[in-house]
Amino acid sequence: MIKGLYVHVPFCNIKCPYCDFTSIVIDDRDIYKKYVETLKKELSFYSGEDFSLETIYFGGGTPSVLEPELIGDLISFVKENIKTEKELEITVEINPKTYRYEDFFKLKEYGVNRISIGAQSFLEKNLKILGRNHLSEDTVKTVEDAKKAGIENINLDLIYGIQGQTLEELEQDIDRYLSLPITHISAYMLTAYEGTPLGQQVKKGEFFLPEENLLEEMYFLLNKRFSEKGFFRYEISNWAKKGYQCKHNLFYWNHTYFLGIGVSAWSFVRNKRFGNTKNLDDYMKKIREGKKPVLFVDKLSTEDIKREKVILGLRTVEGVEENLVKNKEKIDFLIEEGYLRRKGRKISLTEKGCLVSNYIINMLT
Ligand code: SF4
Image 1 (cartoon, rainbow, N blue to C red):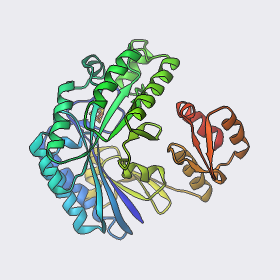
Image 2 (cartoon, helix red, strand yellow):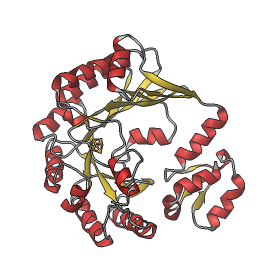
Image 3 (cartoon, rainbow, N blue to C red):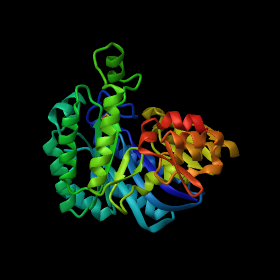
């Protein structure tokens, strides 16, 4: 049963130097409109699948470059053509400065009940380093407008580990996040991905990421300050107020079937993982020709599924059934060293374990 639908919107107003998502700078309403029509066609290719949708997630890119009407149009199409549950969680990723009160009001009418804002920081210095085209006041206004329009469930993204950032500066940032009426925070360490301008700068020694010790302290600080204010960590990089965990993202980590449509979107359906082409022209052409724009399909074996369950499940605070772990003999050692905890038949990462999650997961799988 497919429970989640991911919709990738690959358009942005700018290209941030650290970004490795599939996104292109295009400002053309006609292209946006054609893209949404193409998404509908792609979705129709899957009409024979077993759906009982509980979530729709518009990610990107910057979905908020689309007029709210286009988002509403696609939501209506989904509801008319696919079996959905009564209570749908519908999330739209928003960049500050792209939507105003009227837009949020329309989104609410279309059924959007969760937004995720690419705030990244409230310090202008950091926003400049990150190449963002918004100011901190734009984020505040975006949160206020969304709230006024009746959207209560609001996530803010935060990036830490920026060149020159101190713990005091991170504290200042955290204070600003916690002063706003939000329900969820996603905090990511700045990563210099290969092939991005930031990756190049780090390689050439023109940009310095903080030392590991400082990054650890930053993570502990985030966790401490957020939990003191009632945001509990339910995944390595995600904190939510009680009852406000992102249901859609939990589907990824809980190994629930989801369909992804749009350029570069991934899916997990009937034990197959498949992904679409990353090229916009190629994507549009394939669908025009009546073909699925799928670039690869991986059929998972029983062993693959077990391994994935461990890799994904360990990201969450719920953890994973111990009996799914391949290298069980390492578990007690990792518990003694403070990286894992055991609760009933499940194991999960401790705060210390979260800092080296990839290493621990590799050891166990
Ligand atoms: S706005 Fe988001 S998706 Fe677009 S380039 Fe910046 S980080 Fe990437």
